[in-house]
Image (cartoon, rainbow, N blue to C red; front, side, top):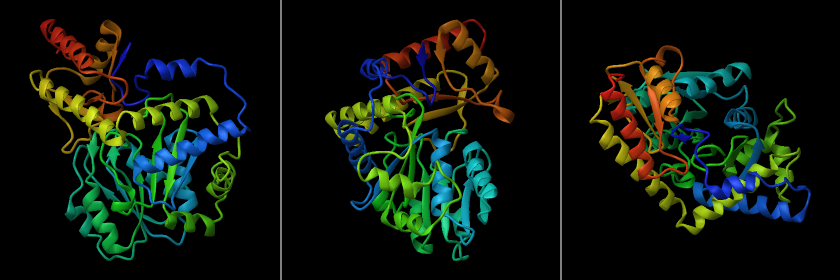
Amino acid sequence: MLNFTVGPVMASDEICRIGAEQVPYFRTDEFSKIMKENETLVKKFSGAEEAGRVVFLTGSGTAAMEAAVINTLTKDDKVLVVNGGGFGQRFVDLCEIHKIPYTEIRLEKGKKLTEQDLYVHNHKDFTAFVVNVHETSTGVYYDMNIISEFCKNNDLFLIVDAISSFLADPFDMKALGVDVMIAGSQKALACPPGVSFVVLSDKALRRIDSNEPSCLYLNLKVALKDGERGQTPFTPAVGILRQINARLREIEKNGGVEHEISKIQLLAKNFRERILELPFVFFSESMSNAMTALHPTTASAYDIFITLKDEYNIWICPNGGELKDCVCRVGHIGNLTLEDNDRLIDALKDMRGRGII
């Protein structure tokens, strides 16, 4: 299988090898050392402030989204939520469930966030801003610079879901004034799904310390306390955390986050230049390096996904709902190469020759 989805993605042989090993016991100094190193490297790669912390959760990215909302926001907040697709809607749902007052910035699918979208809400007594920087359901990448400026001018607590963008696009928490960054194991980290993490600023830590969320498993105050000794309150996904450690060390050895971003950017640029020879147009106005959302002009997007999967052993991302037949998504993260791009483009050209697209 050749996997161009946006998670889980292609993993290296080394990551797969670690995944095949027996899972060791984890209440040990050896595992604590791995966890502390994971925290140090994630802080470095996200541009977190020195006083910041990282909490690793055994759960998908949605677990980290919910943990961020219930641990740092309360009924006394007034939150702006960017909603341009399925994952923006997920933040809206979380605010609704936990009775946190919110206002949506609702965007048409595929459309970028503009300064005007933000500044109609200028100085309206909001306290927090929540955004999925890369709305993976539509492929839209939001401009963090205009978000950062708006939040600084309005003194807003800033929560950013960077799950599919982390390590694929430039991101500096401290410079941008981000208080919470959320990411996961199965995107550009190219490890199996099952672990998400929340990177916290000093301001976020103060909010967590003064808050009492009605939950047990996602209580970050408890997790932070255990994290001081490199441990977790509950049994973690030990094997995946070992794989994450190997990937973080590999990224550091190969030149750090800048090198990783450059590699992904090269794959995205190469694909985007070549796909325009075929009957596709770009669906999103602003794109992350992580993924290209495509609108096929001569065939059903879902039929293209099925044919690639069943006849060429190549996986891309389908869409659901109203976008099922008009949008498919091609990822550029994971253990992919330019030669893999060749194989996908050749398959699409063959489909065109067969009259499928």
